[in-house]
Image 1 (cartoon, one colour):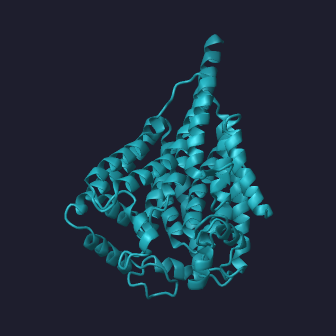
Image 2 (cartoon, rainbow, N blue to C red):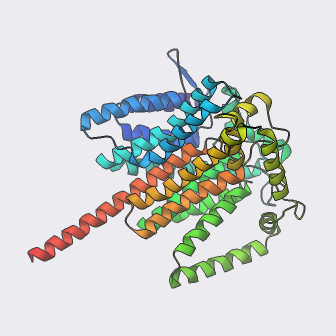
Image 3 (tube, helix red, strand yellow):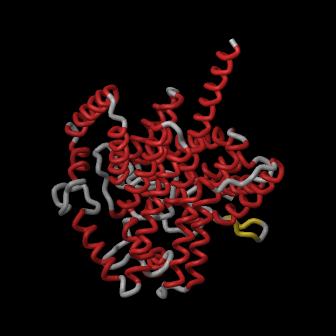
Length: 452
């Protein structure tokens, strides 16, 4: 067996076995696998192990962990996700375009992906905060490897030897090969139109880059370690060369919000200096200038950047409403209908690949679904305010929520919520740990002053 495949098999089996002895390490390995292994579906002892089977294994191993530690279960941090999926499940009883069995199976799979690992991180961190350290270092090591590989891919013209080999073995369509045929690089120093590094798709890779940029921006603010600057630089450069403009746009929007909520003299001066340097860099480079001009190019013909224009998106939205008929306008065509359509028929003649969360929501769950999703986002913002004491920490969590919303609106929803839920929970758990430590230190100082 090829050494790469052997490594993937060993990695997956390790996650399963170790989960019953060291759940912290197994969860950290799983998070690394999300970044480093684009596809896997392992046949082991007559059993097919995929992401959802592994999530079920994690559920059993977590209850073994809880039995040993004798602590209660806390669903508080995943309440917004449970609300979202239970509400969307209710809508499936009123849809007729998809078999209910398909909807339920797809619903159950996405529910597991969005809640299991998040639930475990939150609960275990309350008993043993070391899981947060395990997760942090799994993110550091895996994104450093993937980021360096992403830079290496700049000169391969869109070819990705690692993902091409893995996708061929597991019978998947390699996104890197497809994009190498239809896209050109937006930078003169790179000949790769789209880069996906070690992940399954350039858009998934860029989303992870954006999420981790937020994660290590927060860690840099809290711990002020020099190596975080290297990681942020590596992430930022990979976002730039990924070929997915939405990454730049979503991070710009999220950090603009953060700076507006933190209007202080020091931050304003720093922001002005950063924007001035940024403007000089962009204006001095034709490739960068074209990318930023393309954000406001309604017709899509002012630059040669390519990609979706605003007019194209409006045509797609019109196609969404043309697709929905009568009752479907309110409850949609069924949970997972967009994925079902693409897997069976390919791209839609008008809506294309459903490249916006708005298109996905309306097609799958209609106008009522849109209301449910809006309530879900409100609950995410509120949950951060319930769990966190310090206002600046709340704004930091807002950044990752805004990044997810803006990115998925710009590109679609291709299991992005799995990555978001894990990192959202991880960040809140980390900030709660920090504030608890700060409170304990304050109490210690107060008690010491009183005794003196």
